[in-house]
Image 1 (cartoon, rainbow, N blue to C red):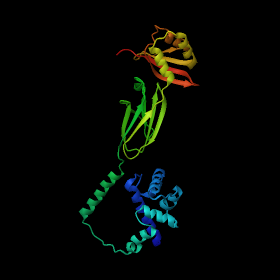
Image 2 (cartoon, one colour):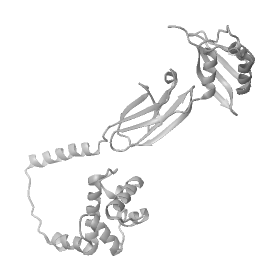
Image 3 (cartoon, one colour):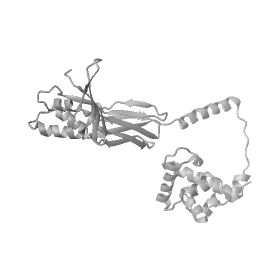
Image 4 (spheres, rainbow, N blue to C red):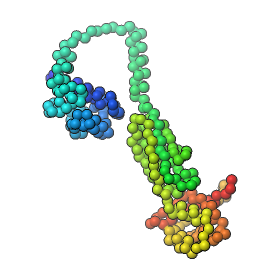
Length: 303
């Protein structure tokens, strides 16, 4: 049998865990199952309430494992105060081991129907305790330009590494999940690709996200929609940021296929005032050494 002081320390750990769980979320009600984030929140709560701290190594030694030795008396006093007692001596006095060990146990025989009912009730209660609570998660994207949000593609990367497409609605995406971590992949021909990883708290979560515009893609689109008197200046800019061996494709309507351009032909079409590359919509753009090496586009037509 364990010595009385060790039995009392086990009870103190239970009392400390219950105190923490009253105001803080954790992955488990069993403190032996707590991991990095849970331990960090416990350390912060301990520091805030009793101005004391224990290390993560200490937590693993005394809480997650059964140590042969008790912690130092100052730590026992600290944990006792956190649990609502004056000190370790006060905790021992109010939690007498002799009372625990010697208190007679009354045995009651439950009727069979009541016993079965309690089992069913326990199973139902466990289901609702274990089942993850769905949270409302919302990500909104700032400073989107014109209609470029229509070309933003958002994928939710699920734990099994599959991806679920999300719809952007009024510059935001919304999802309901019981997961504690969310990963989103953002791709767009008009913005720099972005991977978002967030740890989600137990409550609903909203965040504003800034996307970085792809300036070259926006410039190409602008050139296709505007006229200028200085065509030579525009031509020099295009020569500078398009690679000589760039692969440039026009996606033709419906199933008509594609049309391939070389660099000079594409630049000429963009620099001719009466050119037909009006209202160009970029579908895909790839860079190498800060130059466009692949471009796929289509010409928007009136609906």
